[in-house]
Length: 137
Image (cartoon, rainbow, N blue to C red; front, side, top):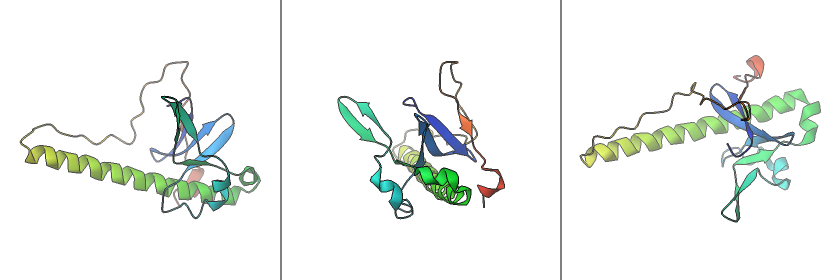
């Protein structure tokens, strides 16, 4: 996963951590909520000589001293992760319908949200985040 560590809640990636920095998932629906984070560069990686920006924005340092605000940001990021997952499911269902219409019997199976790939000992650790009961609120 590009040398980063995923932060998960309810089987969905709501954040990533890299170099002791936390980045929350951002989409069009929560971009205004994360306006403060817009001044920081988004999480990115290098590919074929270019930089690919991911939809994860850096959490301001002040959040680590304001737990209620941190939870609010995490909830907004989790909501974005849920929307992204729903869009992915819709895309897979659409592909399945198109394949059947074309006479192709290939099926598209939705990924089990609880599934985690096996990791080599040298890989980053998956962080399973529940943010206690405050996450699901």
